[in-house]
Length: 117
Image 1 (cartoon, one colour):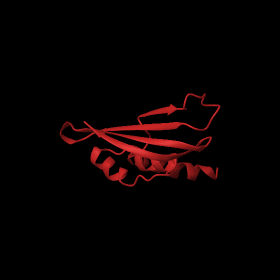
Image 2: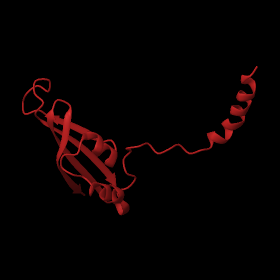
Image 3: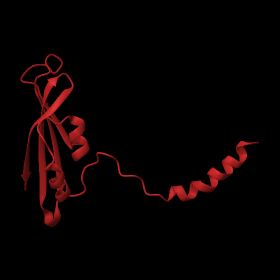
Image 4: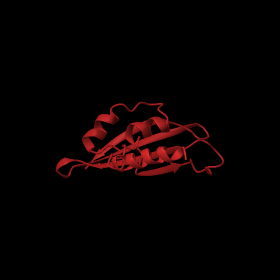
């Protein structure tokens, strides 16, 4: 019986809480090309996967190149993340971020390049 007042309070609060907008997902991709360009200024060599994802969000595409060896045989290789955004007045931009492996599953940024079309 003690939990009945608690349940009533929670039930009374539920409708107002349903109207709150969902929080923006951390690490989500920037909403515009301009915002992506501003964020990309903070890219640095040596950044980790997590740091890049926090800055730019999840990549749209990924690619792994392993210098001809099986991915399970050698940590050497290159991981590429591709981002793309649509800008104002039909301009679009894409950003390629390239990572190298220090050790297995320890990737760090080596380079990045913008392509605007």
